[in-house]
Amino acid sequence: MALTSSRVRAVNAVFEAGNFSAAARRLGVSQPSVAQLVRGLESEFDVRLFDRHGHSLVATALCRQLYTFLALRENFS
Image (cartoon, rainbow, N blue to C red; front, side):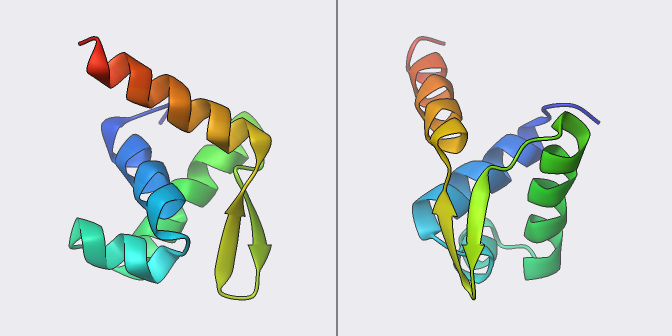
């Protein structure tokens, strides 16, 4: 499935919102859908983008770098 626009939007929303539920509300989709997109990306690339702490998620260094890269890329598109 690779790095699709749906996965990018999900990761960005979770990064900004701090949890799957708030990200889902922001995107207008279900919480399981957002979690599945993020987990699918993590699984496919064998990386961890978020450390899970109960219902809170903390972005890993890799996730912060990805978020910054995608934001820069979007600004120059």
